[in-house]
Image 1: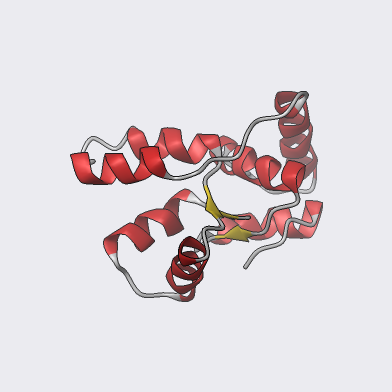
Image 2: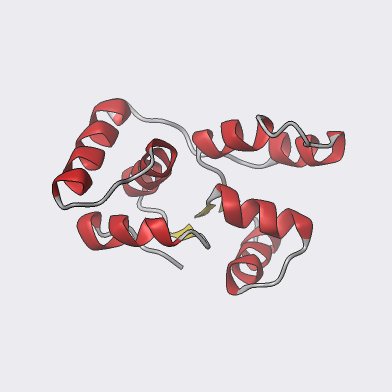
Length: 124
């Protein structure tokens, strides 16, 4: 399984160009693409979401939240803040989901570099 973050999933759906889109397309073809639950929330909250895109989001496989997730996410964010980073909560939830399941992350969001440096998340 390979997790795709919200920004890369949107770019993939819109048919934009980029290495992340190529990786997402390949993962989707191989039936390896998954979404973190917070990405589902972010995507479904878009006021401009069309019914077709909503159907795609709802059909996309997602990763389960495991016991202790919220506590681990809070501690992860605290660790990054102590190192001088300013991690967004949604990014923290995506990163923690990947860490919990040992999943690499497809992203175009440079903010995840802090999670790679501080927590070892694998960024594709």
